[in-house]
Length: 435
Ligand code: GLY
Ligand code: MN
Ligand code: MN
Image (cartoon, rainbow, N blue to C red; front, side, top):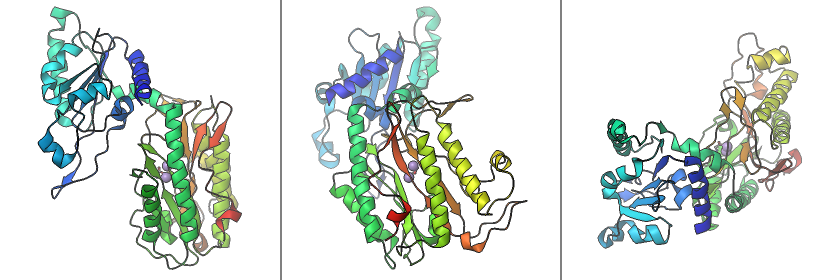
């Protein structure tokens, strides 16, 4: 996989120009009661190196004659490796990961200045590692003091993640393969969950079945904590207790996806536990589906990101108006955001190495245009809380609507001419949701 990472670094170097960029690994794995929890590499760091160990720093200096890609890593240590796993070490950093030179991480302070003193700006993302944040500031300040004498060195610090985000947003062939695999496994799990869900089953049984399928299929695990929310739990956006028993008449909202080789899937389906929608559930489901299909139709290249949200809002607000859940004039209701108590989140997000992947949505007043090989989720929903109260000037909410929570979420690839719904393997038509 050398070439994929080397190509990414090439593209980054072109953006760095005469600057220097520093990326650091994610903080060490959580250690609780002497047990090490799974370590997950920082996505920027992984994107550029493929290196999965903690305590590492990568430096990129395009202007340096020999050392353009420098890795600081943990040295090999047979005693420590017995406890926490094999290390690449300095040799591995060069041979396996393609660094021009590798140093012991303990030498960072000593070796770093030579790579900073001729470059401007310094790209670095102030992150969770406060100790490193401080170190970088100290190096920067020191170099700034001697700038008048030397005439070179960083005068400005810029955000390294933003520099990378525009690259990470456009998926390569290799990345698309990984996302498709994560989606394939997640689609299978959703279809299986649909068949296993019936009255008296507990939410955690469905969660267990899905997560078993993820791991059995070679996924690293869940992309995010699985949401298996029946009945009124479907109105809680981040419900993760998953401990209720399902009953006939309940809806079941499942928002779950796996992470395969660091790439994620993110899928939501909502269906009736007992096999048949109630009249009200069916009406709201149709509305969410109509909004989602309209939103997906707006996913095409050179088209602003926010169009999907705007059409979804329009469909949902018109629908709530037709049902008498809202009252007034459509444009005014939209302008005053009267749909917000029922559709309170965005239309979707970039998807990739992170579930909520990097990428700008809006620059000043201008919305980001969609481009070929971006992946975005489309996930409108309507949630009418069991204790929903009408806003001032709005009609009382009839009990028959209360406790209905519906979201439909697909992962959508922007293609040259339009889009491809990558998660189409999980049915979502009204007919398919009933059994
Ligand atoms: N499951 C997280 C999300 O849909 O954004
Ligand atoms: Mn999502
Ligand atoms: Mn989701």
